[in-house]
Amino acid sequence: MSELIISASGARGIVGQSLTPERVVRLATAFGNFIGSGRIVVGYDSRASGPMLMHSVYSGLLATGCEILDVGMCPTPTILLMSRVEQADGSIVITASHNPAEWNGLEFAAQAGRLLNGQDLKSFLDIYHNQKIKLCSWNKQGKIKKLNQATSHHINAILEAPWVNLEHTHSRQLSVAIDAGNGAGSRISPVLLRALGCKVSEVFCHPDGSFPRPSEPDPEALSKLCNTVQSISANLGLAHDGDADRLVIVDESGHAISSEYTLALIADFLLEKTDQPAYIVATISTSRLIEDIADRHKAELLRVPVGVSFVVNKMKELSKDNPKALVLGGEGTGGVILPNWQYTTDGIAAISVIVQMLADSDYSIQSRVRNLPKYEMHKIKLKIKRQAIADELVQRATVVFGQLSNSTLDLTDGIKCVWPDRWVNIRKSGTEPVVRIFSEANSSDIAKELALQTQKSLQQIVMQIEQESK
Image 1 (cartoon, one colour):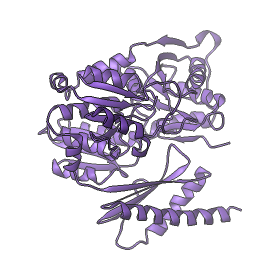
Image 2 (image 1 turned 90 degrees about the vertical axis):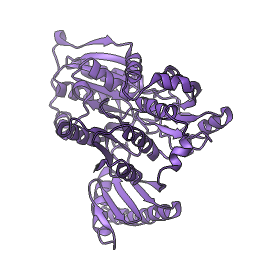
Image 3 (image 1 turned 60 degrees about the horizontal axis):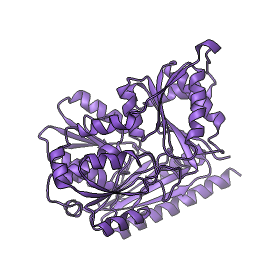
Image 4 (image 1 turned 120 degrees about the vertical axis):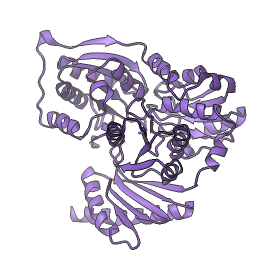
């Protein structure tokens, strides 16, 4: 049986193997105890296993006396927004985000959509691992309340956002192709685009549980969207992952650009519109491009470990200390956390910023990308049999890579070796049984070679670990 992966991103596993109804019930009852039998918003993405896991979650929460606010199939940011609207005590999103179709998982948040911090996660997992679960008596069971207007709430909130100018977007009448990968964004994003005055062509917008392309919207997975943009001469193509917290962009020529550009383009646009002090919070593996954006606008950049909760915690800290500042955050995956919005990556709200960016000027996506510095990134997933091996691998690799000449070692998250003209980051994934290798340089050949050399070194260390364990 494969391992259930539990991290700051929640719990994820392969359905029927590491993620079973029994484990989901146990996780849900532990979370119900952690919340204190409160009001919990529950929703799920379009995966085929969603309804089964939803009923398992229901069972655990009802048994601990929770009131379930059921929003049905919704994107992750919509569910977290509804938790804030309802002032709920917590939320559970049934999703595996960008993982393959056979995966699913649970993502947890506390009051009003607040992502769990380190102490929260520790307290919750203490209940889960140590069987400190208390169930309610027969006459104190929880109840279920249906909430049917979640997507409408989300769309209306976006249309009222300070960066949206409906007069501009409607007068521009952009032609946009949207590829939701048959995920949770299939219904909401086309509706939002039409509300912004766009002419919309839908690609894979049937949330039926099928995955016609990989859920992670990497450029190589977006061939149909690229062809659609070309065939209809669209101004823009947009793509989501399974739960629509990420956004990837296709330019007007039908070329899918790296997910690193989503945060960069949005930051460049929003920062040029403000004269306030500004901060950008980005993960350690986000492109150097965001450093150039920060320098261009005299904003301060802060790096944190990979994971939305780490970005959010730093953003909150900065906003508290600098209440008049513009604080923007995100990851190079296409996840953006907008200023004064909600503290999670929101691929639907990000759509509105990109549309507004194009509506406010005659600049195309291509021209805006050309106006930014160019870096090339290469990514490799090194599969690991057990999480314990991944931990040992990173520990030993720290010693090996610490001996490299002319490099600076950053241990914010895993290992990041930085040279003046390139960098490589090695870190254990919190969502898949892999160690991720990210490299970046001024040319694709250098970035690829650096990643491959790193992979070879790590494979040798894995062989040593496995031999020693025999």
